Length: 331
Image (cartoon, rainbow, N blue to C red):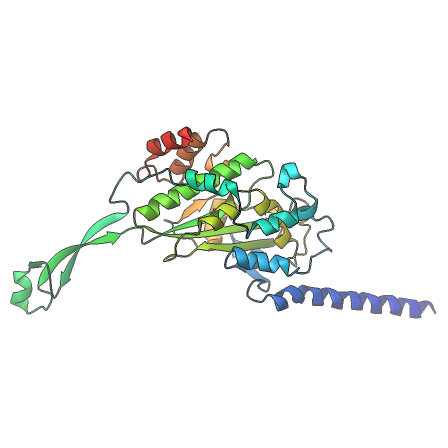
């Protein structure tokens, strides 16, 4: 009889394992373009199991959460996305979710007004000139005629050092980060993007939330703007201005990940710039916008925060900081 009880317990245990495996697959099966299967990656000579989500835009993110993906309740017994206080996480989860696609926000006009106060100082930002030989147009090259070359003309063309200015923007930040720090960073980044685009520089903006817990790495990608597209300032506003985006929306995405470690304690640790550059295989000229503290953004003075952040990005020779500080102070 005792042996039969042991067998029953083993069978129940096997059944629970099967159910757990089925639960792991269900979000990926329902959303294969968003929820990628786990895989091994090595960063800084350390191997992680990577859990990755890719959202092509805010509507993609909204639709995923509205579809109510399975929550990993085995790990997340207390749901921070729901239970965090207003002082820390802002509006309640349901309101924060609907806010993603809402265009009726009086603060958005204020944001846009603040987001276009900077200009470039150098009208040749990112431009150098190179000599080009061609079959038509330009100055005749006698040596080309003498040698029979068809490229008998010499001219100069603009060579852009910033063919695409890529911005990798961290959505995650330390728990002690204030709402004002979050807002100031959004205004500063949008000012820089606006100024570069006004100069004719193509901009690529990628917002990510990448964190780790022991040997597990979670990566949530939100594609804000690809090169060649118009900047969606509404998407920038929604994803970067409000603490709800991280502490309600992205926390909710994390709660649907099939992680195995104890993520419920703090929801993982943020990854620094050196780690992210290696993980993203970012070009050395790519701009990395880290959490507000790492950008020197204190949340007390927007003009001062602007100057500090521009220097951190090494753009002080291209962005007219003093003029921007004057306009931002006026506002």
